[in-house]
Amino acid sequence: MTLAIQLSDEQAKALAEAAERLNVSESELAAAAVRELVAAPGPDFESAMDRVLRKNQELYRRLA
Image (cartoon, rainbow, N blue to C red; front, side, top):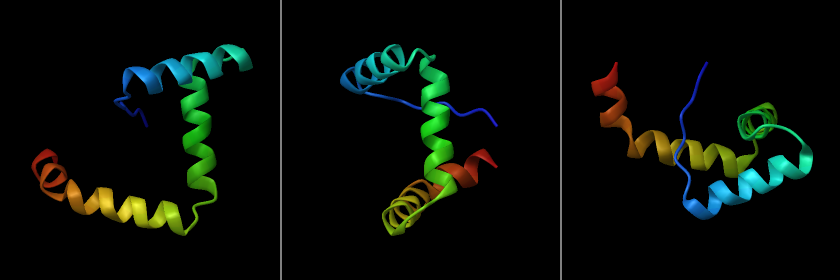
């Protein structure tokens, strides 16, 4: 699966700096973070996921 995400300039800069420190690409670091989050979702993740899905329900319906 391929995902596209939007980051603020500040977030993009932080991602680039962290990737450079770890000597990995920005996309590799972002993918690792998503895999980690999905592998062990906690209650905060579940509520955030529900909120995003409800907020974007109409968009998802139109894209289907």
